[in-house]
Amino acid sequence: MIRTVLQPFYTLFVLLTFLVCLLLAFPVFFIVGIRDATSARKVIWTVVHYWAVGWLRFIGMGLMVRGRFPRDQKFVVIANHISYLDTINIYAAIPEYFRTLAKKEMVRVPVFGFVYKQLAILVDRSSTESRAKSMRLMWRQLRTECHITIFPEGGFNETGEPMSAFFDGAFRLAISTRTPLLPLLFPDTVKRWHFSGWWKLWPGRNRAVFLDPIPVEGLTMADLPVLKEKVRTLMGEKLVELSKL
Image (cartoon, rainbow, N blue to C red; front, side, top):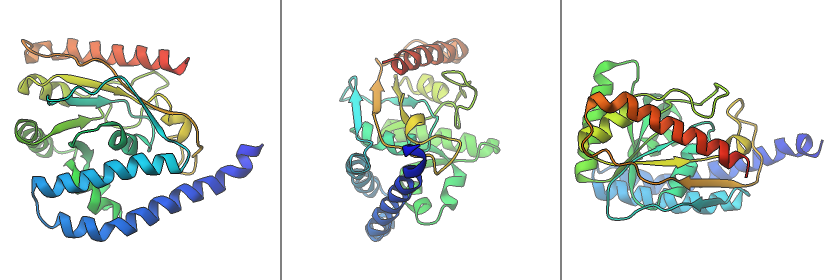
């Protein structure tokens, strides 16, 4: 009863604070983002990282990071996706500069879209050409610039299973670049901001859990299906375990 009464007010508080922060930071992002350069993207990423950490605390969803993010090595970070909050959590959880693969449609969101395209590698999943281009760009970024993060489920997991089916992209990228995978789990975001409605927000425990890196040295594309299912099973079982804690 209390939640039913208070949730609209809490949701309004969260959305207003998000919008105010975005509008205040936009001039900085616009000026810095004029240059298409690594240094500019790093500045924007740094601001977003520390903002995400602080904002989540401010709204009562402070992120508790568990596990270890190994340093001095590039990763293809793969995370489960079941909430709007995941795209904010990932910036608070990962302590080093990265770029994420994101749907091209995100750019259409006013103001937010401009900022997001500075940080993301955009893909139109309906276009073979776009998918190939994004793969080439991610390959180059891993080699020369930063980590890559991908939600391998592609969209919200609405299947009722711990993890929905994975797309091949993250695993193809890891194998072709010989870059280890680093699974990242968000076991609480569906309770904080449910995927079924933008207004379904509620404060509380918000964990990010890094699992051990998964090496891909010696694997070929023939090993991709087995690797993909192995990782999906591992992440699903760990999500079930975390949901009981």
